[in-house]
Amino acid sequence: MSDMKTIQTGTNPMSFIRKVTNEQKRKDSVELLEMMVKVTGEPARMWGPSIIGFGKYHYKYDSGREGDMCLTGFSPRSQALTLYLGPGLQDEKLMATLGKYKTGKGCLYIKNLDDVDRTVLRKLIAKSVEEMRKRYPAE
Image (cartoon, rainbow, N blue to C red; front, side, top):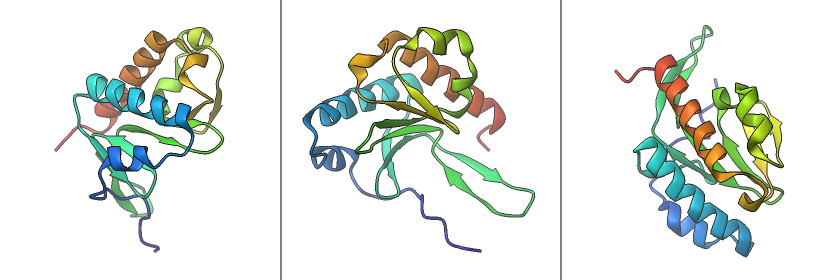
């Protein structure tokens, strides 16, 4: 079995954000960090080299593979801000009012925060975190 690549690191999330070359993504990343801290009540931590995560949960697959991952988080990728919301993306009513975005498996892709309704985004983050905490209660 291979080693986990996405593990919590000691890197300071703000140091990482300061290195983002795109000014808009850098501004949006600071805003997302502050939003996710407020929604989750958890400090920002780096997961792997490029994910800013909040909280954590422990998973275990039927195969025996297990590990820890952040409850929610984001990464300022070159193409878009990638938000890891998993269950929050299943709320069709909220998604319909969010604005301009794309989705992938458990991910929400936003070019910049001005493309979406921030109140709706906050609700999606909160819904995702609430569902993840139900699925993976802290031990």
